[in-house]
Length: 84
Image 1 (tube, rainbow, N blue to C red):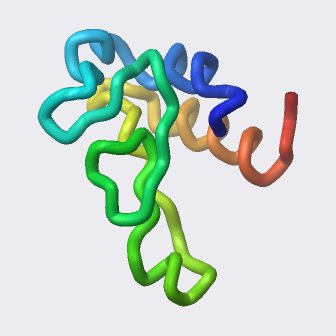
Image 2 (cartoon, rainbow, N blue to C red):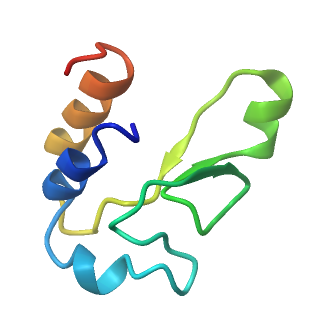
């Protein structure tokens, strides 16, 4: 996901430059980060997912005004289909 960060941000709704500042439990929109139970990361991995080696991740970058189909397609293309 790090390699496609800019493409994801472009598809994740308008106004992210005001919201993803790196303050107030958000990651900066200029940098991709991830972490276990890290609410300040771009992508948060729950503790239970790390402990069990399976589960889900939470992409915290999409804005509330995003198109859910566009965002879901982008995540699937990047994580499952490994499209360039």
